[in-house]
Image 1 (cartoon, rainbow, N blue to C red):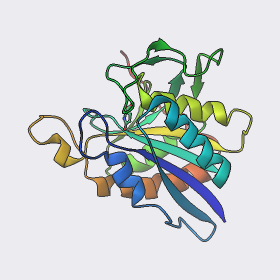
Image 2: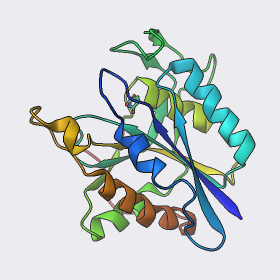
Image 3: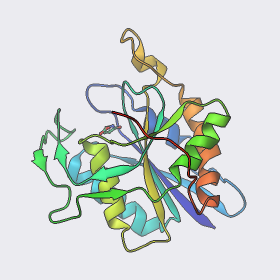
Image 4: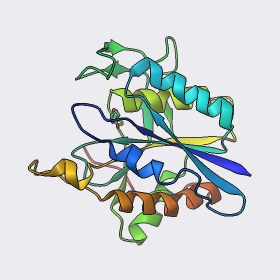
Length: 214
Ligand code: PCA
């Protein structure tokens, strides 16, 4: 049996819940087929601790693929992140009260890593099913980017293990009164069920346009 590791985050920034965990939690133990099973883990919204939790999960589970998921309130689509940067600039403190301003994730690490997932193919598969999805070229400078960078750094010598990061919109209940986009958690769950097999099966990503002009 092969394992896909999905991670989601605990709530942060005064929210009662985090849709990333609400979604991936539902897929814990789900079998994509006879050979591939999903295991879901929650990460703390804490710069240092989240990296250790991620490493523990990877060492224990030895996944073939890792997708970390986080909330990006205000985004309108499922955003598959292309690039993780070696930079932390926290607009708000993490859940342990730490607020680094302009620090590296890994001392002397490379400036950035690209995801090793075929994100254009994944986005395409979702759009064909009517689910809003896009490639994103910034994962921000907070805990999500840190986890994404740490993930790619931890796996840099394990070329066979592909990994990436997905930012998701608020759940509908979080968007009440805020005039921002939201996406039902069930739609996120369905999207993961659709795009993870694509990620496993696609060795070369699609060569289709997906960028932004500004
Ligand atoms: N979103 C935050 C951290 C945890 C989460 O779910 C971010 O985008 O950095």
